[in-house]
Image 1 (cartoon, rainbow, N blue to C red):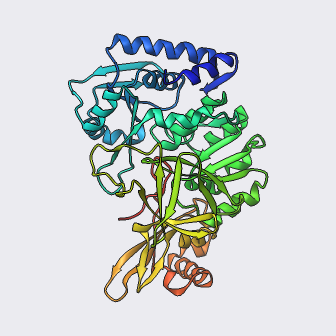
Image 2 (image 1 turned 90 degrees about the vertical axis):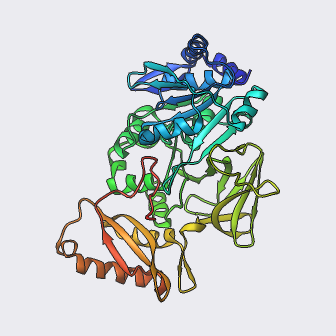
Image 3 (image 1 turned 90 degrees about the horizontal axis):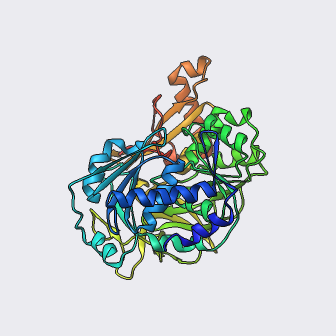
Length: 454
């Protein structure tokens, strides 16, 4: 019932590649049979409408078929990956998980039935309506992860509109709203899901080359890693027509450099959140950070203090472990500060991350973009530190490129002076970091999103 339109597409494209996993292609005919296999397995384990099922997996033929089978059985799906293994017990408790399905590295499975009986009112509402649900956890970098509950039937609606069939890399994780969106978009248009064994630049770009991928949905952090690793020099990327990026602000310097290297690849900024799904977007150009957002099922408005708010047909029902974030009239307050130019917006960064220096606002992404123009800087994180006189001052943590060498780079005092001179030439005085800290640790999470100091 819920996936009938998928199954019709699979039937019409039985002989086409649906999934590439570990160098082997699996057809839509195979996916049809595997989805039925999972229906039988779930029935044998007593998984019925409203059962809360955690799936611990990455993309694989079995995990894709399982996801579809769980939707069809109107279960409440809680996807997780190894990137959040340290929070697994927390997630099981918060989501009131009743069954755990683990898809192993060899694509075999293990099923554990827990003693929990889910009773949260949001889960009860989905059960009462016999509607499939989806629980997505936030990254939780500042504390406990929030668990957003979705009506899966509403999330599926937009995929009933046919679009382009693309060969797409599944870069964004199995438990990420962007990853779910990429997977469902690709399958609903009879495209090909190309999985990767890890998310290193060489691994991903080798898959693009070998399997002629057309779409790479990723993050600004990963695009920067492609550039600094120079992995793009080792592979044929001529099949790649579109690279989408989202989840965090894009440093303009990174965007411009990638666009200069690959003028024939369309760069498209996307916008979405775990709570509201992925909006349709249109970048002004491949070299521009300005974009239009919205599309059917979404409305947007800008508050008086320039924060983006969204009203979404497919927005979450609420959190399992936090109060509802919706305004009284049903809008989701994103917390993203934006600049407006006609129909276009530019995301400046999270309102909570803006640094107030003596009444002047500093946007970390703007300073980071300047710092990353220096070819010996791999990553730069900009944040505020309390100051008795100014309220806050700007600090920057810097990771140098691994190949950095030479007397200037060996002398940290001279290097800091050179970086400060560069900043003063490209920034206002209040934006220039007062202190530079060198740190060899990477500055991104397993989701390839910048981790900021608290």
